[in-house]
Length: 373
Ligand SMILES: Nc1nc2c(ncn2[C@@H]2O[C@H](COP(=O)(O)O)[C@@H](O)[C@H]2O)c(=O)[nH]1
Ligand SMILES: [Mn+2]
Image (cartoon, rainbow, N blue to C red):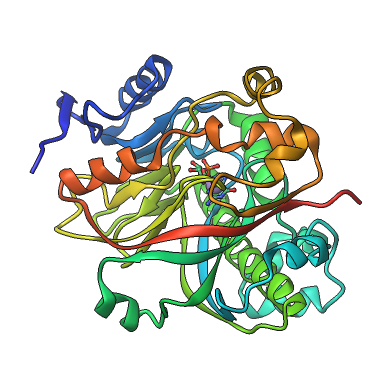
C-alpha cells in the first residue's frame, strides 16, 4: 500500500506520481491549509484549481469556518438511481431526440416536493428539478464490469439494468448564500457560535436539502419521459461544511464523503465512472475521497484546443458510443471529455492508498446537459 505525501504537519496529499496536479492547485491547497484555525487538510487525486480555493480537497478547522472555501454551489453532489430500464431494450438514439425540458420549470407541485424534503425555506422553487448549466448533467449508464457481485446485489443493482447518475446542486439558493456572505465578510471566516455563523449554517442546511431534492426531481422528470420508476442508491454532496462529533468544521470542496457507504466517482461523459466502497478508518483522509476526475483544462481554453479536431456536432457522440444532449455549442466544448483528467489514475491512486475498493465500472449510454429553449 502506498503512503500519501505529507506536505507539512497539517497537510496531506493523496496523489501518486501518475496523478497530474497543476502547480496552481497545490499553491491554493497550501494557502488554504495555512489559514487561521485550520487543523488539518487533505488534497485528493482529482485536485485542481478553483475560484476561491482548490477543488478536490477537504479542510478541518477549529472555532471558525470559511464559506468561501466551499463556494457558491453548496450541496452540489452526485445521486445514483437504479431504474426499470435495461441495456437490452435501450434506445439511446431515439431517447436522445425525445428527452427534453430539464432546463424548464417543473409544472408539478413544487412546494409540496420541497416541503416533503425539508427544503421549502431555501426559496428558488421555480428552479427545482432543473439541471443548471456548467458541469451539471443527468446520465444513463450501464454496468461495464462487476468487481463485487455481492455488493451490487446488496445495492439492488443488476448487471443488465441501466442506472441514472444526476450531478446538480442548490441552484440559486447556494449562489445567494455565498453572495450574501461575501457582501458582508468577503473571504473572512465565521466564528463558531456567532449569530452570523448560525444563520449561515441554517441556510446551508436548507441549500443542502434543496440540492438533494433537486437531484431526485431531475431523476423523476427524466425517467417519467422514459416510462420508468426509480430507486435511490446514494446521494452524496461534495460541496459543504459539517460539524464533526468533536465540534470541528469539516469543509469539503469537490470531495465526496466516504463515511456513508458506497460512492460513485464519475470520469466524464466520454469515459467510465466507478462505483467504489470506502475501506479502513477514513479519518486520515478526513472522511473524503475524490469526487470525479477533476478538470485538466480551464473552460476558456477548451474550444481553442478542440475546435480544429472536433467539429461541435461530433461532440454529441463519444468514443464509447454514448449520446450527448447538449444544444449549447460553447458548453459542448467546455465539458468535452478531453477537458478532464484520466479517471483511472484517480481511482488507481485511491485504491493504492488503501482508501477504496472498486465494486463496479459504469459506462455512459446517454448524457443530458441542455436543450435549447
Ligand atoms: N459521467 C460524467 N462525469 C462528468 C461529466 N461532466 C463532468 N463529469 C465529472 O464530474 C465531476 C464533477 O466535478 P465538479 O467539480 O464539477 O462537481 C468532474 O470532475 C468530472 O470528473 C459528464 O457529463 N458525465
Ligand atoms: Mn459538483
